[in-house]
Length: 204
Image (cartoon, rainbow, N blue to C red; front, side):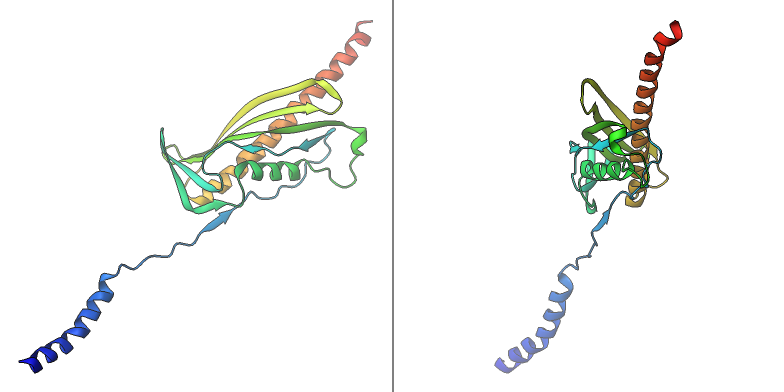
């Protein structure tokens, strides 16, 4: 009887070992991917210069991508992330976009404006399929304490797919639109100043 039990136990061990292996769940490895805004070319022939200060980050997720599921529910992606916070990415993008190209007029010969602000929203809406970038900004002028422009821009860039790649492309488009908007604001400001300066001469 004792020999039978030993033989039975010996025969059962391989079976138990096989079961123990199959009972342990296999974990799938998911690679973490990192995205960034594309580095833009500087805007040529601007009649002013723009110094970009650091934009703060007021949106959810910080380095992780945020997908809006419903009005009051968001999903923070643990495996797809930004190279830095959206505020820092926008700061880097704008600094490159507003950099003075080689051969341009000296900075001292132009009006110098300063731009800063904060990123309030940076997310991809799954239901409506658009990338949302909301930016609150301030524009001041060096040496002119009376000049200050503040505003909020909310960009919604349509996307075909709800993917991290589409998110990054849409955010890049939104950043470009914001840079163009800042240029338009300051261009109109200088035109207005020029018109006011010419008004007395035209009235004579």
